[in-house]
Length: 431
Image (cartoon, rainbow, N blue to C red; front, side):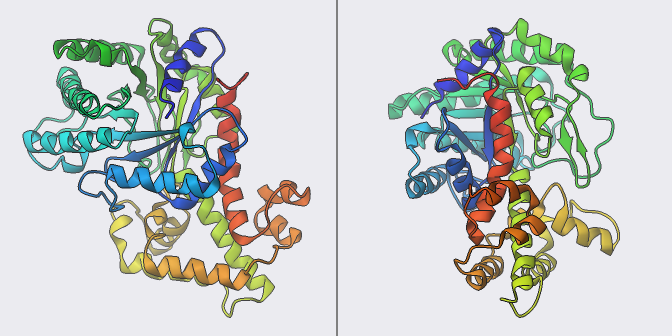
């Protein structure tokens, strides 16, 4: 694992040669496969992260503990021939969030067990997020308390890796954490983190780590989560405006140890991603934007199958997903709003892509498998790629990609990741 690569990002920025790294935040096997295949011929590591709700010692909503997720990713790497030494596994939003409805002592106790599990499984990038209030606590929490809790969890990680004889991890800290998975409604009036808030977060964590004798751990803090002014809601995307983040970006001149970690960069244009990296937002997290691309490709194949006449009914996959989401509304009904037409549109096409939670369900998996069986191994005609997946047409027309059904799905995900790679490599990739 190449966690030390992340320590080089701040050095590169300080030297005026900014580069970055894409953080792939997804547990979907095809997204991970696409990320590994896309990076196969490139230099540098691939960073794949699991979140506290998704993967934890109790299983999370994927049913995977950290050790399970590690084996899941390594299994995919083995299938595609990707060098496991180029993988960095990260844990995102690690703290009491999944148990914030409990009193703080209980929630933090569960968070400790989760951090132990992530550390023992060899995750080498740890985002400490203790910003959320627990039951009975005032919201927002005071900064010193957030830092104290983060340092306490860092101590748990340090003890665990030393006892297990594992490499020491790097850390990301930060209290200005965007809503995981995107905002719930239309985003308006988004505020950029102030330079003062960023400096204060670093200072408070430095003090808290020192109080527990964790100076060596603090020296491995590589990133600070801030709000650079990017976000997406159900129906809109806020694009990065460099001028608004100029003061925040300047903080890095006095903090050469770290770069900024930007969450919710999904759907940012290529130019905006490049500006983010150039301005020191060197860790770009993307998740729903990748499963959004996956869904686009699957729905396109649904139309292609109907056009080719290989299925009895058009949009069968679309209808299956609608039935499934209606029968099991838990993953979307608290997040989408409006009349029935608006809800139907959001269920399938929202930027927050809450349909991603349904692909593992048996009915969805069977519908996808039936679609692939109907299309078989036949190449999809170029003209239909142009019609339904136009972003892929240039490479397909030039014979540069697989035209099988799964090949097109992986290519659609990789198309998004290529924009991230271009932004992150900047002048040159690190070696």
